[in-house]
Image (cartoon, rainbow over the protein chains, first blue to last red):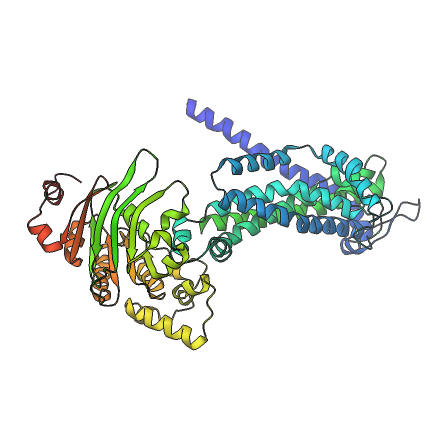
Length: 285
Length: 255
């Protein structure tokens, strides 16, 4: 009897999650419906107009999709040369040592810093540097946002990659050493290929993080609604346009913002699913 | 000339993991060329530790110290570069460990690839074929050379690992309980293979299986608590052990 009650409570609690998730998706779809109906799904995706002149409203998601993909891709590029060495340092070269545990703690600490702090740092420390170096006149823009975004995703990519590097069986490494390989050769020709799919999947998950990051990007990207023409130009990401405009929007404009939210949700969900699936496969092999 | 200098000689070899405890204590023994020498003893007696000293595996771990001398063809390997030593001393491990990202073909050639040695396609083909024939695996895999090494059965994988070690033409082949992860049929095939291989390469094999030592080795070492208790002809040791402890181990009193 007691057991049955317990199971019922568990069942109800567990059911709440899919219901909430379904509710979110349902609300997104119904609220975005107006925009899709008015502009057409594909035209909404491919239009770069964003004008809210009354009577001639035109909304399209392309500038923001471009902004999101560009910042994410750049962040990934900047992140790799820092996270991969950290992963190999912690997972192989100094595995189990004090230095490694300090380094991985510090890296994890980065993950715990609230994004508003990153935004402030980017705005008041990095932006003046960008201006001083004459990279862009206004300081903010795609590049600035990507740099800070890169720092934010380093911990995810590094600690997950390190885990896969650690998992490479000692038998394999010793076998390679016993054939006369140097450490560099073992890392390059055995550990990297064997841990490769795991490392790759940790970067996919890091991308998932970067795609939806809102606060930092909103503070640093410059908030213009055009397709960015270079990496130093200003723009908006899908998350930042919503954050910037949701308060003052209504009607078609609000529906368009929610439609962008729905697209962002779908992209992030797919990326995360791919990443998780790859991680599962990498763990099994 | 060859017979004067033993292929491998331990001279007061000691291995210690910590300052207080020695895992291998003052082992002295000369290994005969083209024989199978078995190292026996109960768990923790230091037999694997001694074996791993021969290809300087202990150098990978900063806490482990090796003292004394280990002479390979009269040269003290403890003074040599680990990479040079390991190219001349092959090793096969307890669990078959073919490189999972490499094909069967590439696994045989892994030693060359890892050392950055480039070979022509015909040379590669020749090395792969002759070494897989050496380990009696060629007929089983010649049509699937491009499949991953991990696709093979445990026994086949272990033979592949032996081929991979032999491809580097080592002077001596170290084997650390090479059949303990295999079934009896696969074990028998490996044992037959080793008896054949000793004509080409000197084999030093650690085993906790007395039957195996008796079946394949011509010389045996018995180690206990880090010391080499007895070393001699396998037949003599099994029929008439010199030391009480060896006898106790062989009849199952300690182990």
